[in-house]
Image 1: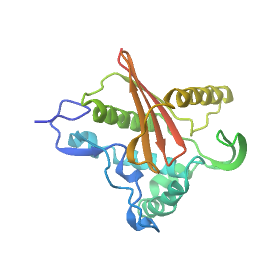
Image 2 (image 1 turned 90 degrees about the vertical axis):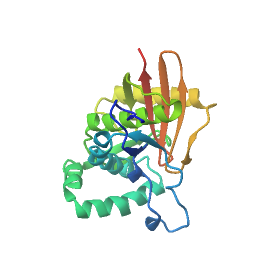
Image 3 (image 1 turned 30 degrees about the vertical axis):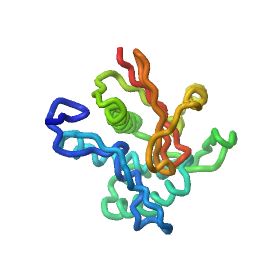
Length: 221
């Protein structure tokens, strides 16, 4: 009997890491591309898999709408997210309720651009991404990770500009460190990741829609 990657309950389902909703459906693509082949799954109990669907959807909304997202991510916003918002408008209303014009700094282009800023539920995003990181760790090692997980999300901007600079610096250092590491994931235009593990920590660099980067530290101590 296999057990859940998150707990000691019996695994009765397979959970996608990252959430399956991140990957476009074929009906939303104008080409013959199929971004749902070879998705990563891990054994999960019913509770840990099904109770997080709304959080997965929230993550999709933010990733697809991000200024760092690729054309594929934008297409997800105009298709899947739009359908979801029409069926269940509550989440979109919540996301857009505090939207306002904002200057957004593009670290890749090194310039400020006009955009639309929204307040992000950071703990909710961190929890969802932490679960994804634990699932990917299990996928890599076949071991459960029960330590602390720290998530850094440069695609979100903080009110404190000095903290934004610190986050940007941390990401740049991580990219330099991971430069020689291979990427994993069968659909890199949508999601891929890099992974390394040491005695006390493991590190991951996640890429969503090509340019949205998330740094994860898993502390074993």
